[in-house]
Image 1 (cartoon, rainbow, N blue to C red):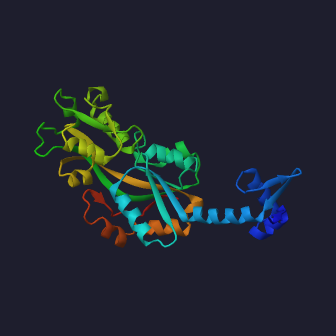
Image 2 (cartoon, rainbow, N blue to C red):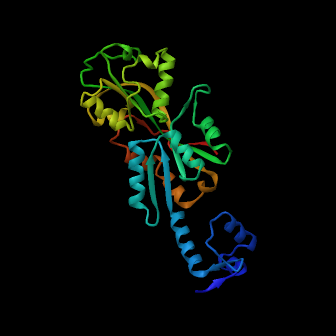
Image 3 (cartoon, rainbow, N blue to C red):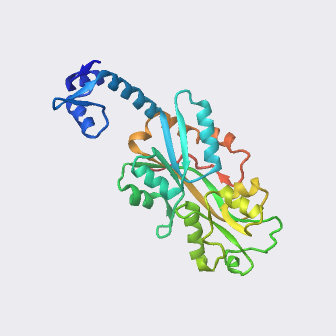
Length: 289
């Protein structure tokens, strides 16, 4: 086994010795201790280089669930020769928390700030705590109530959800859709505890729609596309912005730029042509940079 000192590693990696020891302190660079001295087996260094390159080519996205986003990720993974996107639909808040811990590279969210009447910025400040992030608008989408065909309960407003004969299924706490629904209830002066089923939760728009389709609930709140997919009636209440949050040090990376290029008008319009409820006129717009 070939053993190197810090100077040889620095020359091999084209960095200075201080950076070598910094990587050691951070636990990033593999090393051994022999006789109280730090040494570096070349085999481990070579393996680390390969694994780091693979990590560089992967894009880990966490955050809100969305069908159009999934289609775009699928398109990227089909076209990219040396990169892959992994997507964890864990909800807007959890996505930002994962990004703050660098457990994700990017985060997707659609969180409406009740006080500022704006999206994303205050939550980036709250959970990420610095100015080192770029926010890009991906698209807008319509949110509203799913009801069965013919609307048998005659639901027209959020206040109708407090009627004794209407059952509801909610989205999971921490999701952008749940936060939006809570905001709309507050705007209408509707007490959440009066909504039968408010504390019954599902983890996606599709699950919410299936609950209504199968009659497990009379209504649910979600995006228009799922209502169209399941042939449910849709009562629109809000058009919201869906954003992606990107660390500034990754914003210029080729693979991230390639992913963002799919939100350019000529490309995204062909991907979402059969999806209802989306507005892509401002897709790719830089919100914060």
